[in-house]
Length: 110
Ligand code: FES
Image (cartoon, rainbow, N blue to C red; front, side):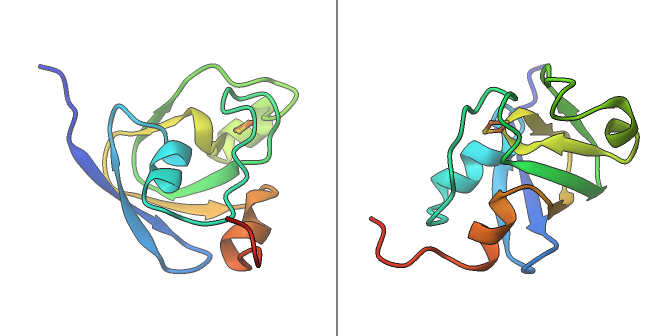
């Protein structure tokens, strides 16, 4: 059976949380819930702005560019939010360029 449940994603940096479907990436769900100032980059695992570290929880990823997330980083459970599909509730720490936007919203945009 296809698992399309909602999973609760908590952003460790800010304590905020949001729901992400298991067939949706962390980045798109974050944009969907209306987080302003999210730099939607390539959305395909190539630019690295959306890098996160998964503090807890299970997830799967699509193919990520090795130049953005090398094997050492993968072992530290670092991944690109545009490539991460949650398999359960996750706690993620935003560590890429996205972090500035999450923690300090851009003024006057939109
Ligand atoms: S948006 Fe480019 S790597 Fe995620």
